[in-house]
Amino acid sequence: MSYLEWNPSLTTGVEMIDDQHKMLFKLINDLHDAATADDEDPDIVTDAMYTLSDYVAEHFGDEEALMAEHGYAGLPAHHDMHQRLTAQTLHLMTQFVNGEPVSLAELAEFLGNWLQGHIVEQDCRFAATLNG
Ligand SMILES: [Fe+2]
Image (tube, rainbow, N blue to C red):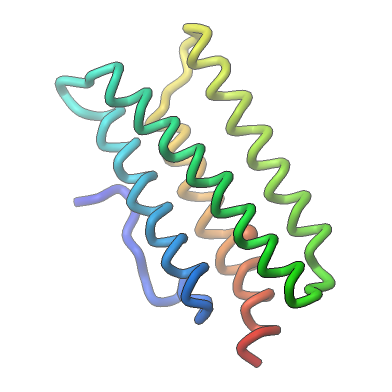
């Protein structure tokens, strides 16, 4: 079973955002799987980490562009949340790359928890302004 399971309460109703969130779930699961595999391969784990962090950056950019396009008043606060998450993630990745004992399975879990809360509390709030 995958670490993260998609469920309908995470649906914002904005197709681009929902598709990207589903892809984020997949990439978080890929990282979690790679980091917890019995025959853990450092190259695969590192690749999964970079693939996920690149996609997070792309997703945040696309989501904020959509918010800007629609004049969403909550954009500055939302941008700050994305920035804080990005800074925390980069900090952990830098520690990992420097050989410090950072668990990428824990990074995947941290991102998974953050994303679920963020989708329900923040992204759905924006989506409601479009769907309403
Ligand atoms: Fe967001």
